[in-house]
Amino acid sequence: MKLAEVAQKLGCRLEGEPEIEIRSVAGIEYAESGQLTFLANRRYFPLLKTTRASAVLIEESVAVEREAGLPALATLRSPNPYLAFAHAIELFYQPLRYAPGIHPTAVIAKSASIGEGSHIGPYCFIDEGCPRILPHRQPRDSPERRDHWWRRTRFRETKRWDLVQIGAVRAGHPGR
Image (tube, rainbow, N blue to C red; front, top):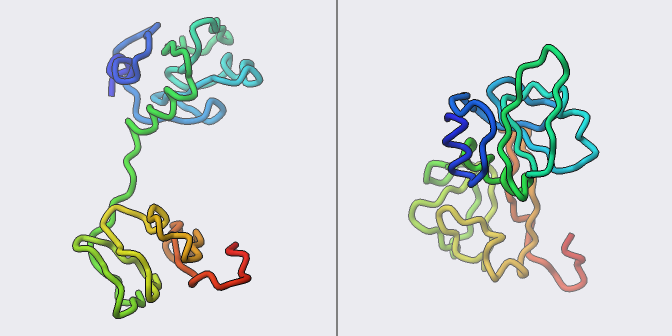
């Protein structure tokens, strides 16, 4: 995406080359050419001189100084660079979407209500009395969540974090 388009979508004022191609976002220490970064904490000002990013989101009042030999750094001026960077992440990264279906290793109570188009992943356990599972909705979004103990678990096989129900909270159980 061209930097001018990024600036327009984020509502920022662009200083620099509008035709720069931005492929992704990264932190100021790790950014490379073709990436957008941000500077919101004054503690990181020295990194502004050496970052390899193509563009940076910064406040209106910040002056950009570069080390000799490094290419110019385009700037996107914003009253809140931290928030603008959060919106920039949404421009370049889309959340994972899972195909509908129930994995063969999932254990589901007979009384469970699974909405059409829902995804139940490997080794999931859905207990009696669990709220209705709907597509694109995590169980923790449910008002009934206080009746169950949920835990985010990283599965070694998939290298992915999933929300897993451990069991119903019992009287006297801390729920942690």
